[in-house]
Image (cartoon, rainbow, N blue to C red; front, side):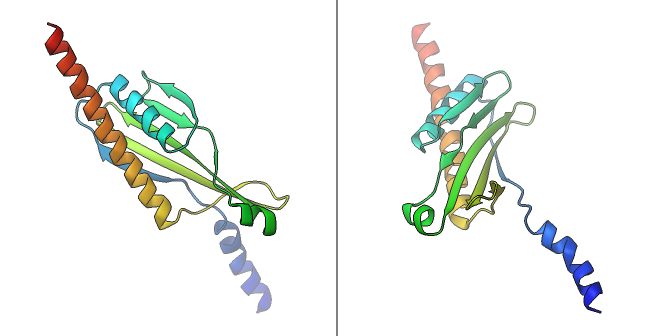
Length: 150
């Protein structure tokens, strides 16, 4: 009986360690790629992320890992945490997608994906809204500049 219990629990033990990155989606109507990329780079920079790639044609902005570790967790628990962000604009559907990946490292073990807290999800929602708002403002400002110069 014990043997069957271990065989039954084995897939659960393996499956519980896999955490998929969380993705949020929001609509952006007719925002040109340059306004979206400028807004995403600006907002992510303000949030403390270092942008690794900003592709205007592809509508993709990705960041490097940002250290989220506290002094206490690193010193006393030997636990490190980090996050990174990806922002993608789907020009076919006018959808903006924000993805956060969070990882945790304990001792000498390799980095592994970690689940997002409600605070992390709230931060993603805020970043999504700030990018949408800033992209619209950039687009409107560019439109006024073109009208004013003509």
